[in-house]
Image (cartoon, rainbow, N blue to C red; front, side):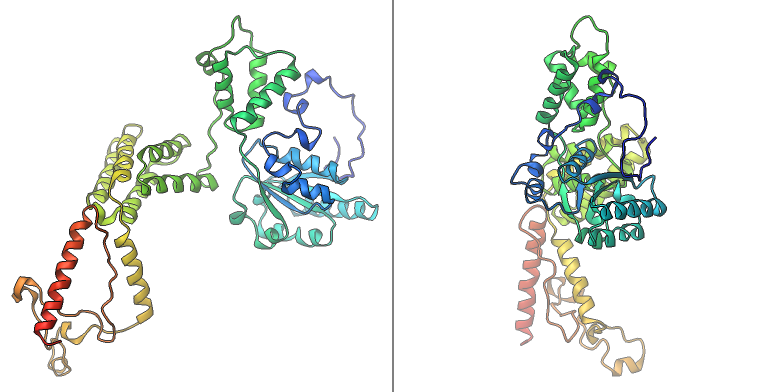
Length: 444
């Protein structure tokens, strides 16, 4: 086996296996960037990588995208196109000693007149110190770094590293790209797969945007012994659908909960149900979803529908009593209820404004007329003087000011004229009119 850190001199080995004995993914590996499927937005002549290669100036890159979309393949071809040695390591299996060997070998190549393109798979798994270790070798030209990650670089990579590399986003392969890959695979195999047209579409769906998964599925189907083309149902019984991409602690988790939250806020129950189902299918804990639904009821519906919070809490309680899968229906119904409820963030906005004002005003005391005066000294200081007991006033409302004496009245809660808060708006307006009336009668 060749050394991971050598200069890639051809090792002594047995002859290459015949093409039919090699995995289909290896046989279909593009030999040129023009053959890469699904990433034209990066590789076209006017796209970022196309312009870099045309100018002969390849900079360090971070390739961010889901599995099976060509990150490794593109990097290999970039090394060939820029006449650099290709070195690949994985952050899962490599540590600081291995990195030192890579950098030393790259320095030797540089002295011999050859550059190095270092491809680091799963680069987000390196810690801060290890990521910092790349910086001097990137700055002095010893290496061109290409890091691959499935996680959001802005969360997972050091700012210093990101400032020295361009982040490029690779797309999930769409059905058209996967169908093109399927056609190429069949051309390489020399025969059509034994599938009906509907089953071909099902095979594309099973790959779920992953080209590598697509080719693995093709290989399985190619060696099936069948008498007639398989229909979708027959195909599903023979193949395992690729699990949807979902990491409960990773970027996809936050993307999907954001999609669910915004769909509910946007009053779209169908989209909300879809994202809710996607998270459940990905293995999300229903209790996490129940907690987030309560948060959505408080933040985005609030007093627009005071029952929304109770509905979400009752759905959570129902799930706890029934468990999965029966209890998940209660959560789904809560998703629908919340999506169709009148929306208001007036309470949320008012609360945040009040907190900001509280921080700004510091330790301003309440006005003395609303302070209790249990001692004679406090009475002498004016505590409680002039307080009007609201229940004794006309309409049960005195109209007194309860803000600190140094502050003007401030409107924090400003409800919209919809949902239940239409009633709250009427009450506010009514008290505002009474307050002005009381002030007028007091000569204020």
